Image 1 (cartoon, rainbow, N blue to C red):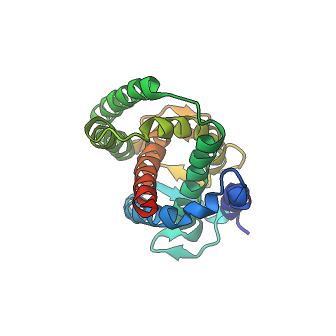
Image 2 (image 1 turned 120 degrees about the vertical axis):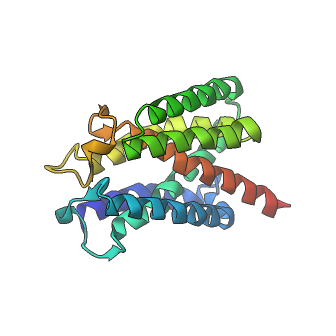
Image 3 (image 1 turned 90 degrees about the horizontal axis):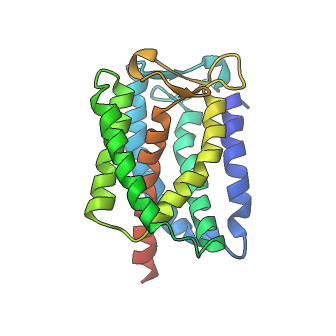
Length: 228
């Protein structure tokens, strides 16, 4: 397998194997999970394809299979299925094992700070397409989902997002060259702010947030709808 494929396998194997844990019973949520992932994945694959064509980011050939969907390696396509699966698994594990954690007030400040940071970074870096798009979209999503709709699950999502940052930094660190001679996924310096967490562009945190927030929102919506 390619190095990128190994990263994908390592990401999914644990959550998939533990999906049948008696306390979490994650497998019972698959009916709500898969539509949520697929809906958001379609949007992100279009975004990914466009930015790949524009060379805002790209992939080092020797770290991928070579087979592509459009301009995207198959490993990259699977990323938008596997990473959300793993993150929603974390979401359900935290709900099952830490039911008494209450972060409503913290989540409010987090949403305010994240929105402010998103607009600040995005509007001051309009020429950097990745910075502008990821940061501004994350701010707009937070306003629309949290400040307008006030969903009861947002505080739990913030808990999930913060905990998931640990595996996120590991996976994205590997993809962006922390352990390889060249990055598996590279970014054009013309379209990012510049600061990195080791090898990870800061924008990746906002991008990850943009992807996970609507997925968790749709997952919670479908779960409640079909539970009835």
